[in-house]
Image (cartoon, rainbow, N blue to C red; front, side, top):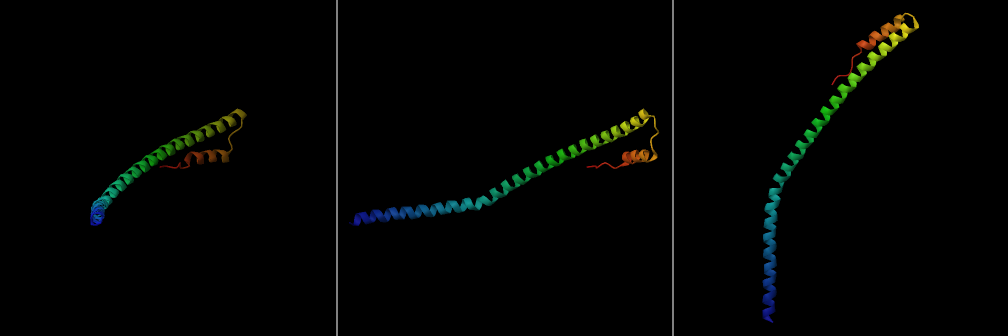
Length: 111
């Protein structure tokens, strides 16, 4: 009966020592993990910044296009109104002429 007890004791000893070694390995991996996490955080933050910059540049281009469209539409409106008055054979009212001048001088949103 002593032989089976020795075998059980040896198996238990092997299990405990292997768990101790695993804990040491996990400890070194856990110590290495914060640097890995900070590197991945840096990578993600750089990527986020790049994406944000691209979005901002895209929005600035869209704003410029919209400003050009607004200018074009204002010019078309002025041209249509002046053609309408000429076609009717009437002189453009003073208030309307002032309004058109105000449209031309209105600031357009810039970037």
